[in-house]
Image 1 (spheres, helix red, strand yellow):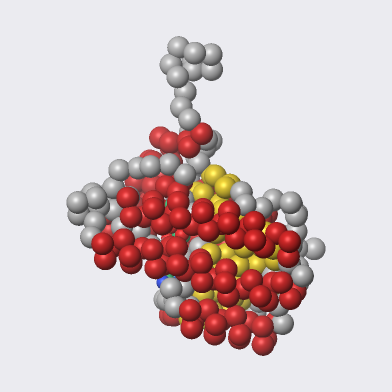
Image 2 (tube, protein in one colour):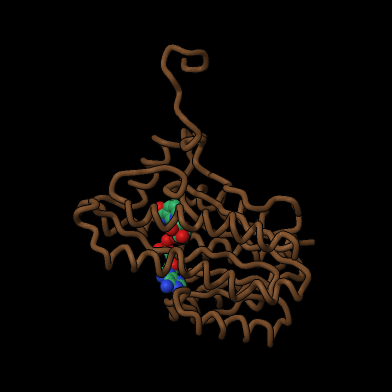
Length: 266
Ligand SMILES: NC(=O)c1ccc[n+]([C@@H]2O[C@H](COP(=O)([O-])OP(=O)(O)OC[C@H]3O[C@@H](n4cnc5c(N)ncnc54)[C@H](O)[C@@H]3O)[C@@H](O)[C@H]2O)c1
């Protein structure tokens, strides 16, 4: 028996990276998954790889009409939507002086408006179905500050605000809304910002090792697997009272720091 048997789920940004891993895990656990993305060729290929319980649907999360289409076609074929994972996201790394207003608005459209539209689109069908689970993929940059990501971090902090407010509104309909905040994801996202010749997976794994103090041999793929398993837990029926939460996957990095000389520092 799978942990998502009989559930119909929409995962955005699922053509590659974290979204594809989440979609694969959901399918393995018995769900039917609609993979939404702007990358049609890669999205179709990922859905084909996942088998008969996966289907690709073109979805630009910043377009309300695309949301209407994906919800309508999902309901027409499957009759219900049990879970939505707002995973699609884009990154810009630049100093505040080199980040233009257009850069900020481009990120807001995908990272903030996208999940906002998604929640609006599925709230009605989830109410009709008697409940549901919405999981927003945020970032540790939505819990703390970091140089170079003023625009990106602001959209991720904003997404946590959407998460908490919609969780308050929708709880009486048994719809849960939670945020998962990973430290890392697909290496492809930050690759364009690395110096020439630096391998993006090596760079991501170096950062994980420095910041998360993970077990020996922990790889980037293990971290993305941790993220997918947390999303699965929240999307499943396993904890019906978990809502409005920020579920960080960051080795405790955002909780504070170890003060030298005090107990526990050696
Ligand atoms: N990569 C990281 O280091 C990192 C760290 C923390 C959090 N995250 C978050 O994890 C999530 C997944 O990112 P990833 O790491 O897998 O990166 P990724 O770039 O591999 O995947 C993002 C996916 O979103 C899709 N996408 C972009 N714009 C879209 C749009 N308008 N509509 C629909 N789909 C769109 C892309 O085509 C891509 O398939 C994002 O929300 C990201 O912010 C990533």
